[in-house]
Structures are given as C-alpha cells and as structure tokens.
Amino acid sequence: MSTQDYTDIQNATDAQPADAAAEQAQPETAEVTVEALQAQLATLAAAYESAKEQSLRAQAEVQNARRRAEQDVEKAHKFGLEKIVNDLLPVVDNLERALSSIDTSNEAFTAIAEGIQLTHKTFVDALARHQVVVVNPHGEPFDPNLHQAVSAVPSPDVEPNTVINCFQKGYTLHGRLVRPAMVVVSKAP
Image (cartoon, rainbow, N blue to C red; front, top):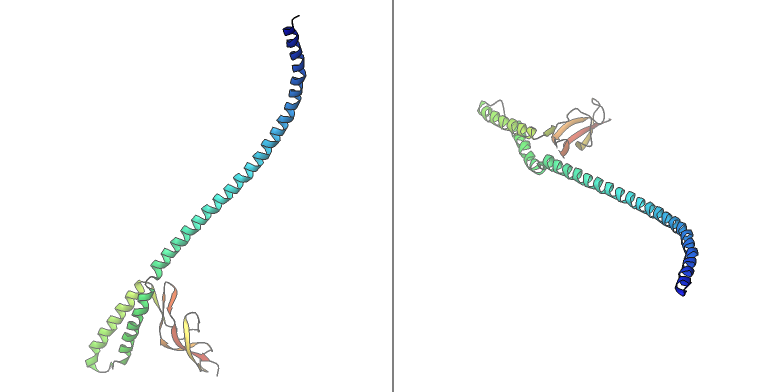
C-alpha cells in the first residue's frame, strides 16, 4: 500500500464521521429554517392584513370625499340663489305694500292696481319656480324655526302662542329658511 492509498483511506474514514455529523446537523438546520420561515410567514401575513386594512380605509376616505363633494355641489346648486332671493324679497314686499295702499274704490286706480297685482303674481310665480316658498303663518301656531316674534299680545279669543298678525312674510328656499316671518303672537290674558 502506498502512502497515497493510505492517505485516501484515512481521508475517507475521517469523512464518514464528518458526513454523519453533517447529516445530524442538517435536520436541526431544517427545523430552524422551517421555524424561521413560519415566523417570516406570520410577519408577512400581519403586514398583508395591515396593508389590506390601510387600503380599505383609503378607499373609504376617497368615497367619503367624493360623496361630500357631490353634496357640496348639490347644495351650491340649490342654495346658490339665496343671495339674489334675499335681494329680491324687498321688491315683493314693496309690491304688496303698493297694492294695500291703493284706493280700489276709485276707478282711476283700478288699472294701476291690476297692473301691480299682475306684476306681483308674476314675480311670486317666478320665485316659486325656483323653489322659493312663502311663509305666511297667520292663524298658525308659532314656530321659532320659521317665525320671528315681534311682540306678544294678550288675546282671550285665540290660543296662546298663535300667530295673530304677520307684519312681513317669510320665505324658504328648498326648505331652508331665507327670511323669517315677522309676526305678532298671542299670549294668555
């Protein structure tokens, strides 16, 4: 046997126990690797759930923002006329005052009264087409959401908190109060 053969045999014998040790170490490495992979999988699953929740929240926020924007546009369309309606209401009041001040028994003023009446009706109809509704609460119970009490008068004929006189009509635009009605309310004697 040559030295070379002896060395080869020695290396082979020495390799067997090293291979056996490697085989024993490999299952431990495999277990550690499986445990590490399971831990990594759990971490990734948690990160996925967190990202999914954030995505759903972001979608909900976008949807809410879109809905709010649509509502704002709708309100702007509905109530964009509020300023001009406030400017035009004194004209309606003046037409009503003109009608009430004309002496209808004098035939010379009959044509003028009819012209003012037609103008008033046309004006009120135009406002009604744009959802401006008159609040004339004469004889109705007092509603602080629609009426502004100017005074309270004792009245035995009417229930307390009933509107007995309306100084100035109120108006609403699409159900929102533009101007409250100025009223006199009854109170117990």
